[in-house]
Length: 158
Image 1 (cartoon, rainbow, N blue to C red):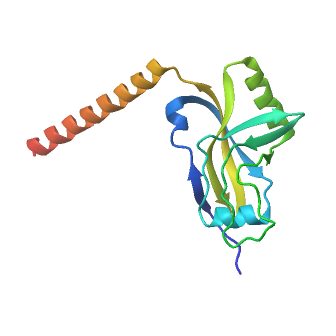
Image 2: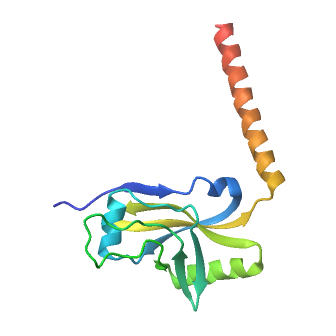
Image 3: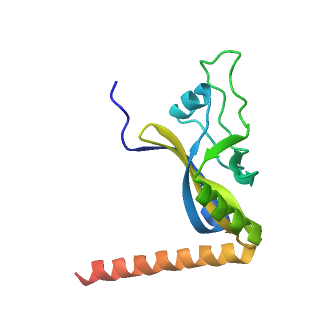
């Protein structure tokens, strides 16, 4: 069987960009069991409540839901267990410094396979306030209306 190439996205956290201002992003490997990998290959995962933290110089991913593998046995994995992240020591120290600054958190943006290996895209982010969310939504709507007006004008002018 040939090796897998490219990226296959399993799950994304679409609400993260709405709720947080993203500062930095990092790609991290995941330490998974066999049944977790099989469940991910079926495209089943949820990053909604997930977050990451650093403890004793190691990075961990918590509250990410990977459902039990349907064809598994009694030895299946726990769906919301804490999973170890694989990052370089320098990256961990940099992230830890940012998070200790205050106001920053570590959230997963997407879970995917890159060349057959499970990866998670992590973001060092700062939570948005309610009025920031409304402002971002208003800007997006204004830009959309402006593009529509330009498209209508161009279409009528032809």
